[in-house]
Image: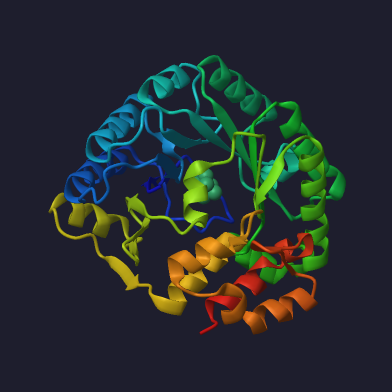
Length: 376
Ligand code: SF4
């Protein structure tokens, strides 16, 4: 079920922990970038008859006016057709949204929004360098519902300096009380070159160790599962019928087209990523040249290992029969030593049809997945 990802990299301000391809919003750059995106859409061939999902991510896509977003979606629809009302998501910053935007979004085909909330606790919002208020999020959720947006998701971050189990519970409970359909929770990671890296070097005790971070992750699982959310992927929770189809395609090792600066694609076994240099991207697209970047052809055990890494992120895990059909390998024989090691550590479990992470294994997923990716 191939999908389309479009990267819209401008933000109203830059958060001190962020390592995405992003730039502070400037109108002239944003306008030139949109023209470059249109040029890339014209340049890229549609390799499949149908694309099942569209995801406008960033950055902060709603730094663009709703009419620009509508035009972009229309161009995507012409070039990369899909079923009627295919899942179409836009990430939004809650301070920037105007109530009337949602009617335009819905008319353009958007049926899912993902709100960058991160926390509902004012001190944590400030620590994260964000500027919204809880009321902004309430207003966005209400406007989205009134406009008929089918699924509303929010992102939350845990292991924020100063956060406590109580304050984390408060954010989770506020999310549940808002009646949203989907929550993505991410542990704060310290990325090289960000202001947070310098802060951690100066004051390491302000940051969480693995054990305290695991405690917050457990709190999220308990709070959201008891509120009726399914923990369908390591970082993602959904009410029935609201799992994100676009991301489910990534975890199924499905194909996707990535458009824009720094965007990744996966098609016919080739994983590629565009340059993260904004001007280089714009120049190449406008001159109708191949966008500079890197690519690699995944095959054999490497391709299978990547697929295992992605599938293990999901609650379902690896389906043994599908794995054999797609990669020609008997999973339990091929990975026998890795499976045994992590099963004995209580991080993996197997039954007649699947291999999956245990609840404890979900917190240590990176270690377990790395063992499959490097196995050959
Ligand atoms: S809004 Fe998102 S993409 Fe933009 S700087 Fe903040 S974290 Fe990064």
